[in-house]
Image (cartoon, rainbow, N blue to C red; front, side):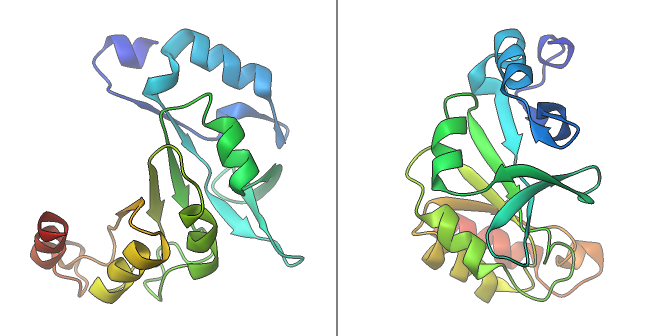
Length: 164
C-alpha cells in the first residue's frame, strides 16, 4: 500500500505470492485486500519443464514453483489482478527468438491484458507475437534495442506500434 499511496499506478508481484515455492492464495488475497485487484500485475515468468508445460519460476528464475501457466490458471488468477506480465525465461535476454509455444497458450486466453517478454531480436519477432497472440498480447523489449547497443531500431519499434 505504501507504493500505491506514494503514486505507483501498479504493483508487479511475483515471488511474494508463493511460500516455499508453493502458490499461496491467502497471500494473494491479502495483497488484493491491501492494494486492490486493478493495481496488481501478476508476474508469471515461467520456464518449460522437460515433461512439457510451463511452470512459474521465482528467486531470480531459479526455483520452479507448483503453479502451471495455462488457460485455467490465467482465468483463475484474473479474479485477483488487473493484468499479467509473463517472461519466457528460457529465451529471455538471449535475442534468439520468441517462445512460440508459450505465446500460443497466452493467445488462447480471452481475459486481462498480458505483456510478454523474452527473446525478441527483430521486428519479425514482434509481428509473430501479434500473429500468434491473435492481437491480444502486448510485448516489452529491452536488450535487443539499438539504445542498448544492439540491432533492433527503437524508432522502428515505436513506428510499428503507432501504426498497427
